Image (tube, rainbow, N blue to C red; front, top):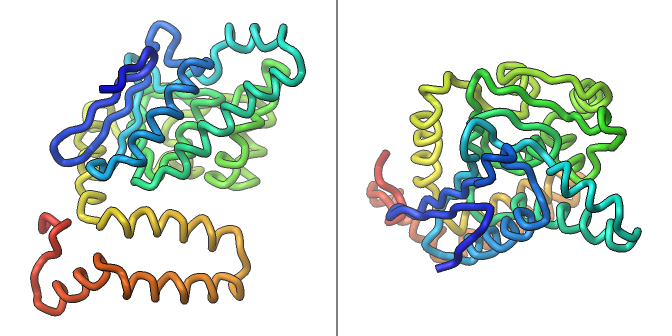
Length: 264
């Protein structure tokens, strides 16, 4: 069994993996060890056929305070090439999570700043607890939200990115939901029940179709309609030829549930 220093990773009998950021004494801030371990976890979970859904959350009062300032301080002393490597590892970790071939559900248990907002932005669905505060605070340190920007801008749009990134001002969970960072803001007492309901919905989906649909969404978001027409025609034909697709259509015609569904 893989062990981690900065994370806990547990998978239940349904195939729901829970990845918990586990540096509560540092408000689950990202450092080089956590970044490397998140890459390892994403690779392991992405290649585990038993895993169907991944839940990402934090230990303690915070979800993720962004980049650990002590890691930043160490990077100030590194060479330019070393700094680019460290920055690149953060970028690659975010891409690993964003590209995970499973549904990634964010259980946002508390505040998230800077890189923590980036971590939310790579989730497919994010449910957050009211009372938490959020902020893209890099400019207040004289830095920029560099590696997280592709995901944050995609998530909340250009106008909301300018409104949040340029001042670094904090905002609450309801505002986070209004701009699309969170999909829902709920009372803390309701967080687990709501996340469980989201997980249950995702467990009704066929795993290969989920992975292919994530690729589909990413493709059509980056291409013109004319290009997407060609791509999507091929992908639908792929689905018709696949064993899950054949099984799903046959079960529908026979008025029975396919093997991956519980009947929820």
